Amino acid sequence: MSKQKLHITIAIASMMGLFATTATAEESGLSIGGDIGMASQYVWRGAMQKGTAAVQGDVSLSYDGFSTSAWFSNSYISPDPQSAGKEVVEFDFTADYSGSVGDLGYSVGGIYYTYMRDSNSNFGEVYGGISYDAVVSPSLTVYYTAKGVTSGFYKTGDLWVDLGLSTSVAGFDISGTASYVKWKKDVTNRPTVAGFNQYKNGFSLVQLGISKDIAVADTTITPSITFYVPTIGKSSDGNRYIYATKATNEFVASVNIAY
Image (cartoon, rainbow, N blue to C red; front, side):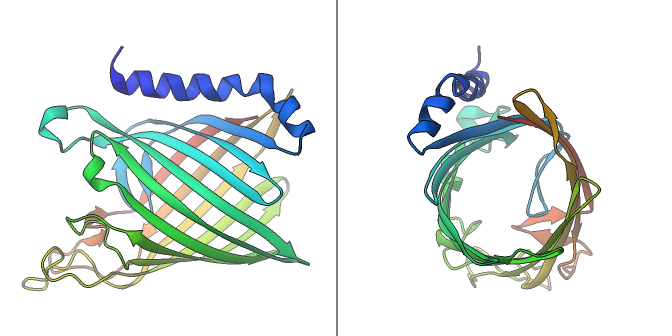
């Protein structure tokens, strides 16, 4: 078995193993959960990570507003010569504190993105967000790159802002997000030559999603559809770029099984 398949198999087995411990943990105030699923492709903030089917899932542990989680997906082909032709497996680790005051919700936390077979791209973000519980619920989340990479692909000081609206209609969860990005200026690793600029500031992306939870025994199956429409200004070559990756309209269909 390849290392990539081994890591994914271990992640899946670990999540399935939580079934046996969830009841005991909840008695002590802990909540353990997770999901496993398949997506038609993997798109992150409008930037293509994998153009074919991806296996994705997570495990989470929460207690009294505090939570930690680990998420994984197979991703792009490794740029490391020692791993030529092999897929990167991404593991994201999140620590979060969330709460509410009346209908106003808030959250703060951090995410560390890691890439097996491309460790030079590992980077970290901190974030803060607020939301309001209503028939149509607005939200605002700000992400700040606290630990970038030497190549400048992810740069310390980058700012990504999501403005969201969400609601439920006839059992379907519907959401829309408009994103704004402000890149940290770096003339060495992010040069603009003859109008060719892969790091333009501005409203970068519109994301539309619809999903529905279907309860089956003790699990929840959630099919979903997501549309990504890049809106950042075009560079001199006529293309739009997000994280130095050419961004085009994308459609992602996925199904997750949560427990």
